[in-house]
Length: 432
Image (cartoon, rainbow, N blue to C red; front, side, top):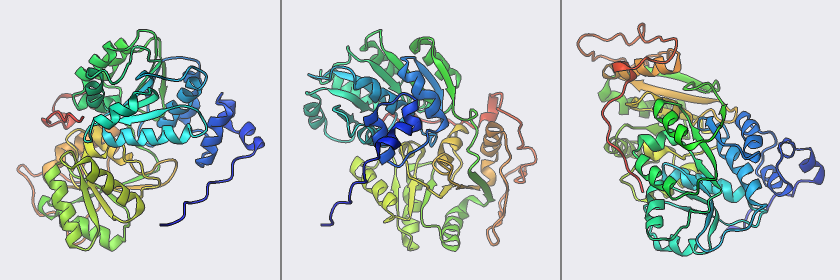
C-alpha cells in the first residue's frame, strides 16, 4: 500500500485575501479550497456567475463543457448554504440535476473538494447501483444533493428525500437532459419543489425547447454566455481526414500508432461500434476500453479511472456515456463517426482544449456522412480543414458523387432548419 500523497500547504492569509475569488464575494473556507485545488483566477463564466448567484438571482447561462461552469455555480451555492441551518431528516437544501451518472459523479467530486473546509453534507445518487445504501445515507439529509432525474424520482416515490424545503435548484446540461427524454421527470420533480427558490440553468445551446423550459422555471434571470453559442473553443485544432467507411478502424489505428498518441478519446455513434473498435485497438496492442449505456456502472467507472491514470491509452465512448468525462489537458479527441445531431460535435470536442490548453479534434469522414458534415459546418460557422492520409484516400463515393472538399459546406452561421440540421431518428435514452 502506497503512502497517501501529502496535502498541500494551506495558502497564507495574504493569498486568500488578495485572491480574485475573495473579491467576488466568496468566504475564506471556500477560497482556501479553491487555491488548494490549484486555481488562482476565475474563468469568464465564473466571474459572471458567482456574483449573480450570491445576489440570489436566477441564472440562465450558455456555457459549454470546459468553461469552468461547475465551479461557477458550486462555489456561490456553497457560500450561500454555509450561512444557513444544516439539512436534517431527508431534507435536501440544494439540488443539482445532471443527465448522466458520470457527470453527476464529476459534479459531486467538485462539491466535495470545494466544501472540504465547510460543515456541509453532500451526496450523489444515480442509477446502475443499489438504491438502499443511498436511502440510508439520505436519512441524515443533504445540504447538496447531485442526482440524475430517474434515480431522484425513484427516491422521491419512496419518501427517501424531502424536496419541499429546497433553496437552490441547478439544472446542469439542460439541453442534454431534454435530448435524453427527461422532461417528464423534470416536470414531476419541479412539482415537488417549493415555489420560492433560486434556479440556475446551464446549457451548451439555447434551442427553442430550452427557452420554453426556462420561461416556466426562471424568474427574471440574469443571462450569461461564456462563449458564442454553438461555437468551438479557439484552443482546439480541427482536422478532417476523408476515409472510406470500411477503412476507418485501420486509419484510427494508424493515426494513434504513427503519431504516438498516448491519451485519445474516440467517439462512436453506436454501442456495438464502440465495442468493436475497442476490441480492435486491444488486438493492435493499444490498451482500450469502451463505455456506453449497456456497460455496468462499475465497468464504466473502472474504464474512466484507467483512462485518467494512463493505464488505458484509448477510451471509446458513445455521446451519452461521455457526458461528465472531465480530464485535465486531454490532448486528442477523434470522431470515428460523425454525430447524428450537429450540436453533439460541439459537445464532443469540448472534451479537449480546456482551460486555455491546446487540443486536437480529428474527424474521420466517409462520403455517406457528407450531409452530417455540412450540418456541423453550418452550425459552427466554419469549414473543417481537410487532409487526406497517404494510403487511406477514399475510393468509395455515393451516388450522386459527393464533394468531400466541402465546397458547398461553408456556412456563415446557423442553419435555418429543415433537412440540413443533420438530425437522424434517434431513440430516447433513459438513464436512471
